[in-house]
Length: 439
Image 1: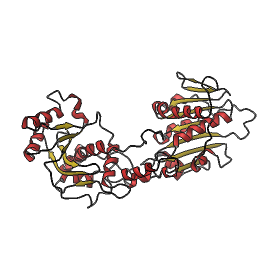
Image 2 (image 1 turned 90 degrees about the vertical axis):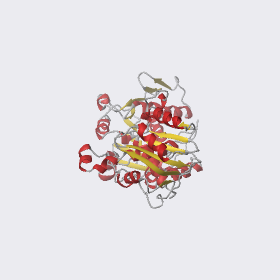
Image 3 (image 1 turned 120 degrees about the horizontal axis):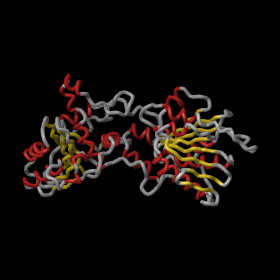
Image 4 (image 1 turned 180 degrees about the vertical axis):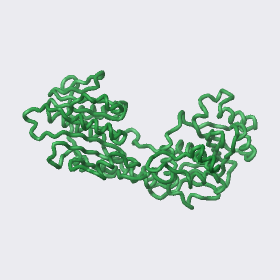
């Protein structure tokens, strides 16, 4: 059996500092702050301390529970010396752990609050609590009504506890725990930097990879308003640079295949930096017309040509002459460019992942600049200076058809940024887990 040494914030989360009959606690922490680990430990401690109690562990979707939380429960049970089929039984079909002392823990998805309407619980745990709606939270709160107690439950309190990464928008957690908290509502904010058991390089790698605001929210565990204002943060004169095209080194074409306008960005890159030196932004066009315009501008390139961009170009079907990427490849080959490679994702990453990766290249937490744009990239710069979020959300504010009719320039918002961000995210994807280790 292992001896556990809790971090101060983990101990604060587990212990109750008040005498109310109900304790509601949220453990909000950065990447690697031990959120799921601590929540699973508390669930097992409650099952052990109160024989015959009934708890529930849920998340917005059951897959998150199955792949993350349940795995952590089994890891704790093994470390604590619990033997399957001796000290506890696990039913995969019922999604339930039943302990030798009569306690049981149910595991489920909370996407439909009606699913838990008939349950009577002593405690409940929420994985990634910020993904839940306030309605689901209230429904779960109403399930804490199991009146069964044994005589030795002298200090029993109903408990609802959750853990989450901080969110960019201020949702129900901010409202209930910061703006209008009850005396028995607690939020424990745990920075990644407080976890003394992480490898030394982990924090440093995030300082280098994340921009200032993203670091403050997702490493320091603080609330923020990252989704307000512009999509691109901290772009300055340091990112603007007159760039020289080099025919001898790899040239990247990164594509967004919207027809009107079609937007491609041209770049060089090295291990840490990306240099956007030109763009193709053409209205009411085709992929073939765009690649012909590229050949017209750059007829003598000697280095590799590497194609990045929108996965909807169907990179897996390049044998067909009709896919976007096949058209590009065939046109380049017909002209004489044979050294052409495709480096594309099988599917497009979420827009917020691309935004985070792009901002981290613009300027990271250590104030290092790794993304440069030539002033000739008129429409990419227009996006950098104007593309924003809908107020109070993490949704990119894309102009409507009506707005575009009133201001034709608005049709150029989003697509140039999409093209550039596909390349950036492909090579500098922000990773939230330490390779080879569970956090």
